[in-house]
Image (cartoon, rainbow, N blue to C red; front, side):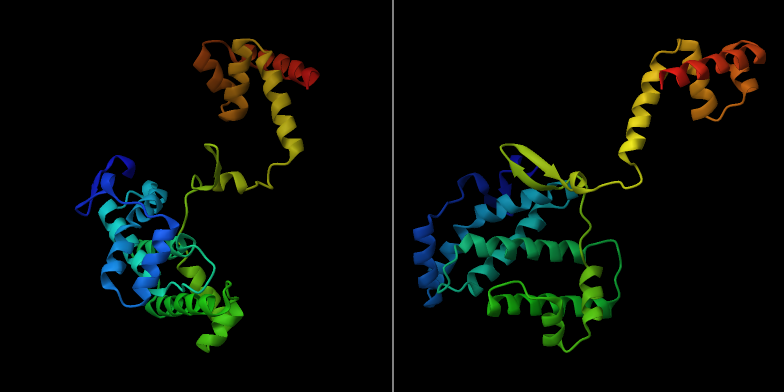
Length: 257
């Protein structure tokens, strides 16, 4: 975990400054007026935001210094592109910019190879999406992105899907009061109906009422696909005894179910 790493890229994270919304606003105004010192102070005052965001990628075993540097690039882009005339908090704008920069870095370092033409189209589409988002103050549709690029909708859609970063089933999608909902919690298995679950429960209960030897025979016979002869040799009884115990166990299980 990155929480335990105090120094990242030569920065002592335990001493990072935290700016108030008023301080950020004042520094943004000065930055837009060309004050480079205010820009530097604004960037440094939001490094803690970058630090908090890279925690989300802790399970990927990426180098924390690399992620921090990439996150800082996203922060700098947010500082330079933020529109102070909009009634939006800077952090609200900066967070997706930082995450987007990190995800682009991870896609570039992905072991899955994508053709150069598809990758180039995807990056052009991402750039167009950012521009349209600023213009329309909402997420653009694929049709709007394709129109801006002069490309076919399906080509743009395939390119953007090709560079989507695979996520872990254990990545949290929502957290509240320490309780998290993970990606795997949002998935369903249509191959296992409620009736099948009930049947499995009933079968397990019936198995539990068998003797240890009967349960072992049923498990070897139907779960490990062993023959009666193999079972007889394994537990040291005759095949006839195995056959008799198996029939008795199955009859008892049928009555229980």
